[in-house]
Each structure stands twice: as structure tokens, then as C-alpha cells.
Length: 620
View 1 (cartoon, one colour):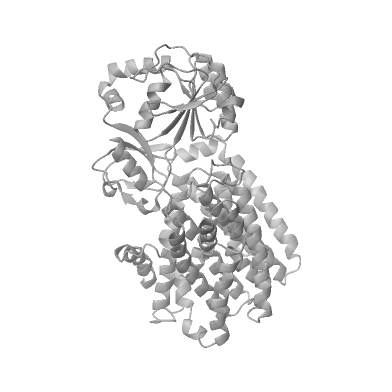
View 2 (cartoon, rainbow, N blue to C red; view 1 turned 135 degrees about the horizontal axis):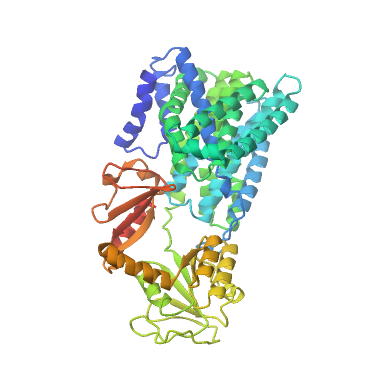
């Protein structure tokens, strides 16, 4: 009851004492120190606590695998430029280079610690020094609003790669030091079974039976997850592999099978971090005897040496980041990546159970992990300022009586708009083209007109000429010329260039269907006019809300972890904007004051452009 009560009270106390800089898991370990062997000694050996603690470790490793987003393991498009004028890297390529440096430096440090007489296993120390805590890095990046930048993506990918690779290396290492014969063969067989199970499950979840079960009340997804965890843990235990690897790979498989089901992932995280995992971390603190550690001068000396080694292992390879970023950003990345917690504690716990390390080294490793989570986020926040998101850039292809007025509306709402045209339109004061046709020109110049948008003239509306002028270096591309085939060709090229949101103007019904089948967002003046007239007849108030000039309707994504779990009524500026709908995953929620807002929710809000921008800056 004491352990569960502490797990319940810790988050409340952190909020009340305004100690949000301190990770919850670190606070749970510190609370365990107070009530355990290092403090009041209130907790004795108990089989129930031991069982729940072991399940907490297993579920922690499962969620570590679940957090890996394999959609990031690709070469993305280059961002436009950093503030210093350098081109940003491909995040995945930069992350691979960075992690390779971390692994090399960590091995050298592990060998150095062995020669100094602190440890006997350099490979174990290499793994521990190379680990990075995803649970610490992600919240810090989100708080600083860096997750959508190339810089933040690079740091995040280094963390993800480190999380995945070090876990695999640790499993191989344990199999190598194991006394059981044929352990290498068994671990290879274990991975083969995991791959086979993945393909069997993937085939099953695409069948009609699964669709029927998902519509029912059987919670088949949750049942399947726990069955999968248990299956992999039992397989790993019986094939000479540690159970933490089985749990980790179960999370990896769920991440691969349901990469975009954030609601389901949140349910699993709620159970894990709400019950089992806090018990594990509190018990880590309970079992740790700091006074016993302090009696050995060698261990006392080992703690600062290991902490320095952690910083060296991340700061030395961070010079790679200097190719694309400033020294402050490069050092900041190295400092934040020094945060290490979950995997170190898991590895230290397993190594202690197998007799690879003794209890004093085990305690020193946990203390160093806690210290790294104290120091790294604070230093990173001082070095790297909070990212202020740039306004969305919209490229509009074709200047005519439809695109020009819309461009002016977007500029008033804070967008950066650049129009590309093969003509020089005669724009009247009201923003409409004097003639409804496009007039040819070949000047190749660009000019910021009196209406606020940047007009760039090209010889021809073709993918090649537009690419030369940088038309595809935008967040949104609108292919709005009068030539439908040209629009479709340009849209295809924009997608190849990595533009995620492409809107295509098509008037022909067959062309509209073709564009929709290719996954583009289609706009048609004829279709929109028809829908507008129908809406004016059926729902005139709704049309008035959408078209009035004083207010606007926009979508705001909740990505700031500070507001995850907050009631809608407690959001800032809610009194000045109206939340119309909350989109979560593939479904929507009718908003009420008591509706809980979660990270990743998309809020459809109405209000003045100024107030919407304020709430966007706060929530995103």
C-alpha cells in the first residue's frame, strides 16, 4: 500500500511544487530511496512487490519498443536552411553517423574503465555508456517545440537507433557470456521465431475475422498485446535470452503493426505508467543502499568517472552536428543525449541477477543514470532556446481569379504565400484578376506586389522550371492553374520532392477521380460552388461561420506535452476561441468542458486569427 500510494502521489507533488523539470521516474526512484534501505527502511522483502516490480520492468521494455517510430527510418527531404545559412541534413543519415561515433567512443571508454580497474567487462560498459533515454529526450524536445525540426528529428532518431541497437547488442552479449551450449544458435532461432510471428500476426489482422472482433466489445487488441508479451517473454526465457529482450521485441512488433494508432498506444501507456512501471522504479530506489556504496572509496570514485564518461561519449561525436548547426546546438545535442535511465537500470538489474556485476557497481550505475537525468535537460534548455515555429509556407501554382484572393486571405492569417505564374496578371485593388485568363510572359523575375504575396514568374509552368525557382520548398503546394493535366504532373513532382500536402485543381470528373485515387486533395470550382449553394439552402448559419471575415476556422494539433491530460475547460484562451470538434486518430469527439485532451489531438477551432495563433503557439 505504501509503494502504490507513493506512485500515486509523486505526479501530484511534482505539479504542486512546480518541479516539472524533474522526470517522474527519477522522482519515483528518489521516493524509493527515502522509504527503502537508504532512508526509513519501511519496505521489507515481499513476493507480491517482487512480482509486480518484475512485471513493471517487462512492461517498461515493451513500451520502449512501442515508442520506436519506424516511419522515421527513411531518408526524408532536406529542409530549406538553418538559421546560419547551412543546409539541414537528412535526419536519418546524420543520426546514423552520430550513433556510430557514440558506439566507437563508448567502446574506448569501456576499455579505459577496465584498465583503470573499475570494471571487468568492457563490452557491458560500452552498452551502458551508449544508451540514451527515449523517455527523457522526447518530452524535452516536445517542450522546446523541436520535434518537427530537422535538428529535433536528428536527436530523436539518434535516441531511437540507440534504444534499438543497444538492446539487441545487450541480448547478444548476454548470450555470449552465458554458460549454456549453443546459446548463439538459440538466439538466432529466437529472432527467426519473432519474424515468423510478426508475419503471421500481420496476415491475421488484415482478415475479416479481425475486423469483426475490433468492432465488438472484446478489446481484442489489448488481449492480443498481453498475450504477445507473455509469449515472447516465455520464448526468451526458454531459449537462453533475457525476458527484457522478448518484451522489447513485442513492443517493436506492435509499433510495426499499428504505427498510427496513437489512441491504442495511449491506452497501453496509461496502464503501464499508471500501475506497473511506477512500482518498478520505486522498488529500484527501495533496494538501493547509498550508505553501503559510500563505504567503498573505489565506488565513490567510480560514480563521477562514469558520469564524465557518459558526457564524453555523447559530446565527442556531437562535432558531427557542427557540419549543419551552430556549436551551441551541437553541444546541446550531446548534452541532452547523455540522459540515460530505463535501459541502464534494466541492464544493471539483469547483470546483477546473472552475477556479472556486484551490488555496489549496480548501485553506482543507477545513481549515475539518475544524475544524468537531472543535469542533461537543464543544461540543454539553457543552451538551446525554445523553437519558435515559422509560419507555414504555401506555394500556389497559377495566378488567376481563384488563387489570388485566397492568397491574400492566407497572408492575413499569417501564412507565407508565393505565387508562381507564367504570366503577369493585371491585379485590381480587390485582388481579382482583371481578366480570367492567364497571360504569357517570360520575364523570369519575382516581385512582392502591393497585395503582400511574392509573385515569381517562370517561362513555363513545368516541374523543371518550378523546381529551379524553389517552388517545392514549401509546406503546402496548391496546383491551381487552368491546365488540369499540368496541375496533375506538377502535383506528382511535388510529392516526389517530399511535399506532404498537395492540393490539385481539377474540374473534369474523371480527372478528379484519378487525382483522388493517387491520394491528392482535390479542389474543383464547379463542385465547390454546387456544395456551397446546397449548404446555403440547408445550413446557412454554418456557411456564415465558415465565410465571415472577422473569424476563421483552423486546425490546431496538441503537441505540447504540458497539456496532455488537461481538461478542455482548462486550456488557455478557450474563452476566446470555440472548439468545434476534437479529432483523435480516425474518429472525432464532441467537445465538452470535461473532455480530456491528449497529445496528438487535432482541435478544430473558430475565432479571430490573432487568438487562434496564440493558442496554436501554446499548444503546438
